Length: 397
Image (cartoon, rainbow, N blue to C red; front, side, top):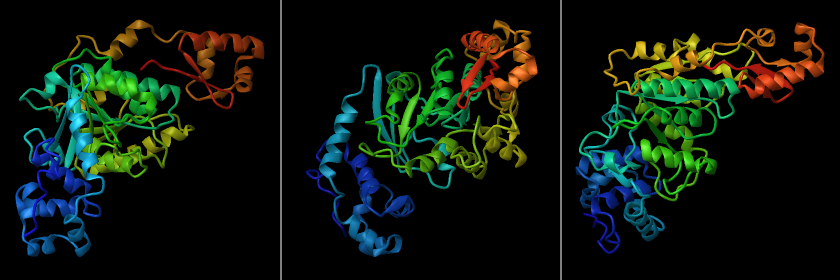
């Protein structure tokens, strides 16, 4: 029998059970699969270190057994960091950690092949102090896409997320640049309700924000939704973390909507995982000439549901009982705000990016007049200037 970590070693800070889970998570080379085998044999994380060596040998390799007998590197620092983080949230926010088997651990993640051992969670104190469920599955939809989206893609993501959040769906994404950020921002524009309006699943420890430019956005999400991570405090934004966290984004959601994605986009990993988890996959089509649309078109050819409006998503999820937070969805408000002006330049632009020269050929206008008209439309939010001297018409979806 191997002795469990002593109370002195555990630093007597967070409770022993959470620290035993943290030790499992930090044990080098152990992995989630082996950890779950040990947990199944022991019944609890703390009891793993009371198992006989023969049981360890049935579950783990010799190298893993050796690692289990030693405290993880920088163990004291990890314990201290966790204690500080748990005790020092911003006003109105709570920090907590939940593990497999905890009453608040999302059942929808238990249905996936590789559920995380621990979830570090920050969110509104009113929610995290309540006895009700924190995660609103199945009224959840993942929205993912390119980190370098088109101007139209950002508009689509933001307005779609707002419209869906106003109909009671919680928007799940990854706090990355581009479509992720636009989806979170759109959901936050919906009127707040008792449930989270958006959930950010991040690829770092929750003691840092990546990218740093999204610090304010992360704070807004923590006040109105949830920010979660499976990675311990101090974890850097390593490249491997982001594809791994995608299984949590799709696992927390009844469906995944891809807004814009190139053929090699990580968003397609999330869509594939959603499909493997038996969840719905949706995609917004785009221009046949746009690289950011090719991944969405591939998904649609493979059977993903084509989405043009929020209603297309809601119709597929019609079994849900959604609580609308506003009488008029954002999409209808946008339509009522202003229909597309009957502008000859907008008509000439169509919906594909065009050069100034091509526009001059279509309209017969000289470059100076064209640039003046394009600037007016750009200021009105109807046209975007793209890299390479291209212009694109924007549609407020």
